[in-house]
Image (cartoon, rainbow, N blue to C red; front, side, top):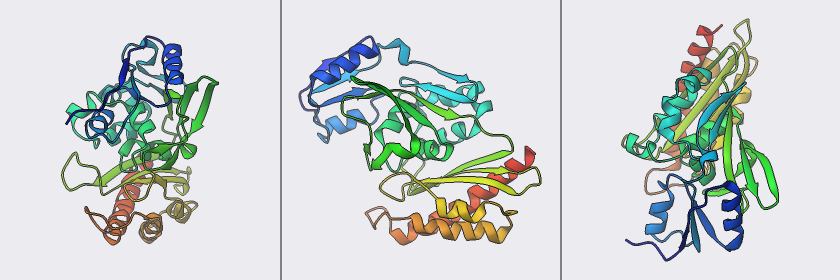
Length: 290
């Protein structure tokens, strides 16, 4: 298949890219291209212009700044996955990235591109919600910070304006006494998950649950926080029955209808199982950090 006709621009600065976006009624940003190119070839996307960000040096790189991991818009999945400093600051990122497609895709695709694309079945937006990250968006009107909980509106739909671009994402380092886990179920390795769950469990010095942050992908029209399961866990000693109850509570967040991949009932079963497994693993890791 061939893409529709479009103008191609290759700016060398963020300012030039923003100006280019403002000149067109519709434009698409090309970073890794692992979502955009198929969308163009299948003619799902019909932009007047494609703006290639590869020449903007300021968008490259990933680094630890204090208690935050700052990921530039052109940082590849694999670059972030293999960074040892990032792994030590928040090992959940590497664990989650290991489930993203295949290595050949992660060599080209970008973390920020995945976050901005807003695929409800993608792993990184779920991690973004669980960790409470944020993105910096720049447009003709200036720069603004968008919290993870305010970014996603619907499948492939975000709160970004048409003339904005995301320059970086910020993900907090793992808090003290916190365990982590990401697990998913897909028909084949590398496929989009039928359901995926991300868990962060923070313990008090006594071992009780100080806080829980759970999120999921593939079960609704956006990545979702599993707040009902979080409420079950917080303040408890995380006994087996409590963890099982949290798994049952998480089923309420499954709103995806039956489709050609599976049924809503099966997704609920998956979420219940994945929640109990991720909490159990995160709890073990949190206890090891006490």
